[in-house]
Length: 453
Image 1 (cartoon, rainbow, N blue to C red):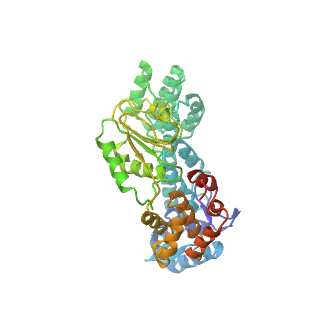
Image 2 (cartoon, helix red, strand yellow):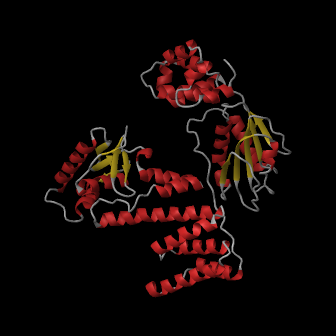
Image 3 (cartoon, helix red, strand yellow):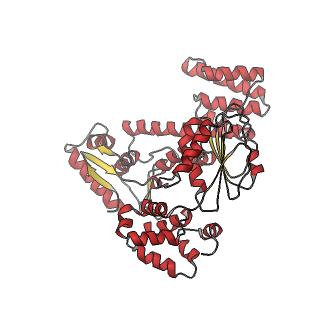
């Protein structure tokens, strides 16, 4: 198991919750340089610059090698630190480094994800490294990433009309970052939308005076336009582009006819509404997510992933709405856009009757497709070594995608277990549902998808 690395604050390494002490500032600096460039080769020259800030020792390469050896000794031989092409490369799984988690959450773009991303920061990044020019420069870059994420989160919360809650937070942010005009603009929006016009205007005057005194410049064009809108009482919260789609499934197999038909309908139809029905576990959500990712560039104003429906006044926005596990047709109707600019993808266990909608009902995979799914998850080489056992396992899972993924996940976690042995275990089990539910609480889902085998 990889250690948990943290650089968004004090440089810290945790192993099973226990902090590994790295006392020497030079070793913390070396680790910081490798983690900031995680999974990339960092040249020896760049690492020397990080460690000695333009004043290297007489034999810098030998000193660098010594520092790397000491770091390996502290963290352990399992550290994925390799010498490569004139430098060093630290292999770090995305979930093991707070900076990687932060960037993945920002890419997700939902309000919850942005909130979690901003909270990952525990202070000034790279704390504990040498106070060198290269560290200061990289720290400034990372700090800018946090500021942009904070601005993006505030925009999302403004779109949710959290005006009163945001006022004290934005007041604090404008005090901490007084030259950051975006925070002042957001504060003005929150104040104006809380019926505090006079305070919104006062905030603008405070910013204008600050910029004149500190930099000898006037506020930028964007905030000047906002100031005029506040004066005229014509302020609206900005449209927030939400990108909420779950990650696409890399090992998606089959359903090519359905994908082509749905894409064609959403591209050409006068009523861009799709319904995908079928029993639980048959792959409705996976199909909808695959199509949504294929078309997301056609809907630049947002891609929403919903599990509950509410009215969606979209005006002229181009938004793709994916409603997962709809209960009935009425739930979908509340989301239907007023024009073809936006589209709706709805999955349901029940067949949905909607005028003008394109509907498709999914069955289980064919045996060949089920085998292909197992090969994609557990590895083609392993599956091809036991082709009959792989086909037997697919049949034992009823070619149901959910059951197939649970079985494949079991085998992926146990690379030494023969496929035939696992298939025999399932075949002999008195409760095949429980035997499949090995990766978490999947038994209820499989049972709902498939009545007793």
